[in-house]
Length: 397
Ligand code: NAD
Ligand code: MG
Image (cartoon, rainbow, N blue to C red):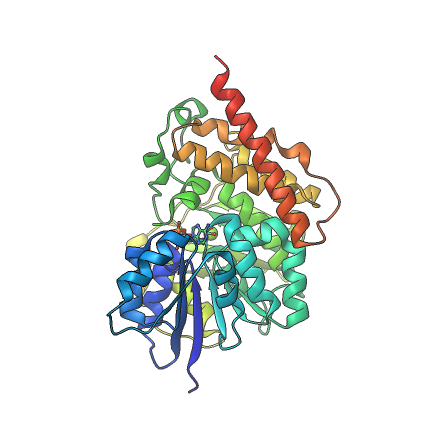
């Protein structure tokens, strides 16, 4: 077996750590070529000791210097790079076969896109790349011959339920509908009034999944499902009308595909991201991921409900942006990132997240974004308008 070289973008995060856990179980099959992180050099030192990558990138130059110093005198021979250029370099490096794209938010776009442009096998956790620039991203994969494996658990489940030989971005014959499941998050049963007072800690305490803080807040507001709706439209070359969101509080069924003969195929498993990660890494093979097998008798019941677009306005905003197409979802993503970060800093009430997003959406238009420069410019503009909204709110009585 030829050992494949892997770059893990965002290796210190929740998905990054789970990816390294799976890779460590199969040292014959994969070698860690590069690891990357934003500022957390102490976590990176530990990962370098364990995996001895050829290159480690810290987005923050000061953290890169600290890492370099810490690794001096150690047995590892890791070269340390810094900044966005370093991130792009390890995503596009000619010796790399597979790139795990697990940076959170818009910061993940350029390195993920670099992997797409250079024909890598991309394991896509960074859904924001597709939300911001789905058309450009899918085009880049098509042109370079990159293969795109969805890691988001729902999209990975859908991919697994597609007809055999299915490749991301293709139209799937015989598929009538995609059923995208959602746990409903920690506030599934809460009234809007009760949600006004929620704290970042409450929002980050997801009932089924342990995740980074940004995606945890997105799950609580249900913007995560909105972003996933847009992600599904691009990955599976379908329209918003063909994707139905179903609330399934147990998070055992990770999504389903409905065929025109009446069959509905589902993928089930314990809520542990190592399953989709192992699937993406080994595809089309299967490998051990370390995840416990499902005990159906213990779970006993699976239940389903319709989503409540009224109590979760973020879901409606994302569905509208997805239907409108063009550049709306890029604006939606930028405004959401500003809103989530303000909420986590206790500068914006939870229920004001959709209000802030709505106040920026006039920046979107029906014309598609045709270059990464256009995407970055609109992302920047939307963040400025969102920041202005925050400032006005701070100064209003
Ligand atoms: P996280 O916050 O735990 O980790 C984020 C990683 O990105 C860290 O390694 C961090 O150092 C790095 N990073 C942050 N900002 C950066 C920047 N400006 N430049 C370079 N690196 C930066 O996030 P996570 O929960 O692992 O999520 C990562 C991505 O995967 C997100 O797009 C999320 O939506 C998606 N995802 C996560 C889960 C999950 O279970 N955690 C599930 C599905 C999809
Ligand atoms: Mg998901």
